[in-house]
Length: 92
Image 1 (spheres, one colour):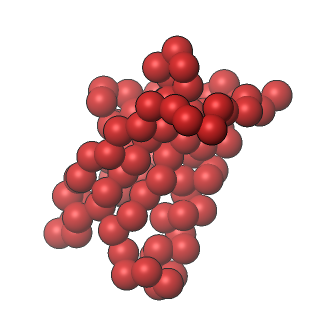
Image 2 (cartoon, one colour):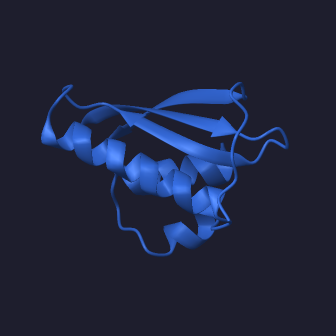
């Protein structure tokens, strides 16, 4: 069952370079310091890539909130910005 997060929660934002582009990744944590949500920015606002990054963040967040770990997700990803996001979730 999906975990409902408190309105105020700890968040970190990191910048990662991938394939010549800079991405800003924000990770929201529950009160036990477990990552539960992801937001990814780095593309031109309103672009198709911006939409895909938003969707990827939602999918990763839902997976985390339903008990799937970043390690489990990472087993199914390739060398993309999503792999960078999951690496950040695993290692901070």
